[in-house]
Length: 381
Image 1 (cartoon, helix red, strand yellow):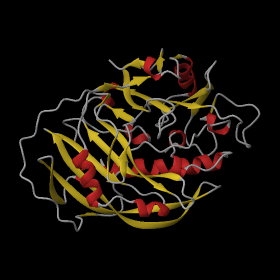
Image 2: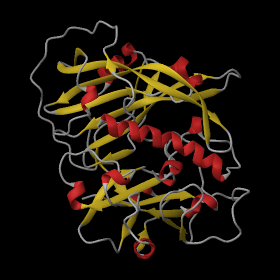
Image 3: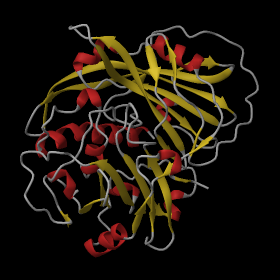
């Protein structure tokens, strides 16, 4: 799987300190790759010349490990009589909940929205050893549109009732990693138990809270089954908010449609970039969850807008090519500085089906809204 999209969405607690070298940025991005791959089982040239990693959290939908079985937790769930599930309608590319808290955990505003789900990060606020405020990324809340089922691994285990609706609580093994600065290496993997909680928020509509610990140092902030239950009890749908995108593509392959949006501005707490994905209409239609993070989901064109890094990393070349296979990337990407802005755009196809000529034609057809004014971006109809 290509690394660039990973790199553009790396997290605050997991990014290497500036100045960013290519290997450091790639190593940090590999964490998101691992999470997306486990989610699947459960369900740019610019990097070399000044990739701006602002140091914020990863937006993702991490799922259970592919290598270990899911087993019920040793927690007695509350027994509550189930009630008839209310009918709920959620349009594609529509955010339906906002930030909320329970206990010592916060669910941040959702940043990822597709035709099948929306996703938010969960964080724990704490004081570090110096008494300074710090944030630990501890998991995700994913809300699937009615008719879209979560991965089967979430839909068995200890039966629970949340808001009068049925659900399942599970416990699973996962690996945590220490980051090694330089060389793109991970070491000292530590296995840890982690919880998941899935419940129906409405008729044929599922939500999943999944505990994810990437660094052993974050284990003290891990969510327990009781923490996840408290968040689930605090969850509610709100007023719909249609997603917006800051670009328009004048040229795309015939029949391609919007598939995914990640990021709502460049100043949010957990995602300093905006990624917009288009894919063939056949891949976008229906209730199949797709991430377009590797070739298994088929062709797609991924546009990621990021801050320019000033000054550039020390290993950045004096001049750069528009397109190429950069650093450890395994597929083609093209990148441009966006004129009269502080941003750049990376264009790529994770499935490696589009030629350099096609990628350049698509990238050169882009027009951009005022990137610093998200309220003026194009609203998804």
